[in-house]
Image (cartoon, rainbow, N blue to C red):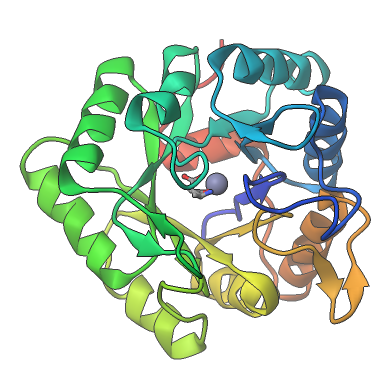
Length: 275
Ligand code: KMH
Ligand code: ZN
């Protein structure tokens, strides 16, 4: 079995300090959380950025500032900016980080209810536009799938040349509007991707660690972080993203799975090594 790639989704666009005071907004806070996750065993940082007051932004300059600051402290980490941004942003607003020198980015593969009146909109043309941009820029997409239908969409668009194998999926499970986070849901998603594809699983809220354990056993990979869940265990807030990553590392150790460093993660995902 390949080593386990841990992605830390340290910030997100929606979670606030009111949910957990350790949620990072400022550049320094984002660096602190990225480093805590890396030190604990994460090889990929899934990055959203905020202004200092917590407002989510896809501003290219703010992304550059955060990426440069993270790389100054942990130069070998893989940084995977979001192109999802926050609900309601335009496509071109969302795509700004793809103008930077980045190795990976998220590519959201369908539209999803996000609770209340919020709809995270990704039309077929949006997915094509984003896929094409990433192909042109040599950016490896992580295919964000909130439901099985989005796996099918990604595979359909790959036949039309908008997404290229080897595919790497992120099963985002337990969103209010997407697939649930039970084991049978995981088995369904996992069984729906082609041979040779890799995946990570991001369980939302209480699904985070049970789905992490399932992916560790299955040979998949794991995403944790404040974007998805702010609790270390029921009723106990995590003090950092590093604490969430450390819990995955403990689970992996118990289950006999080694942890990939960023160099190994690049190999597994088919990303060019750093020179
Ligand atoms: N914040 C959500 C609207 C992604 O990063 O690509 C979108 C999201 C997915 O978080
Ligand atoms: Zn995200």
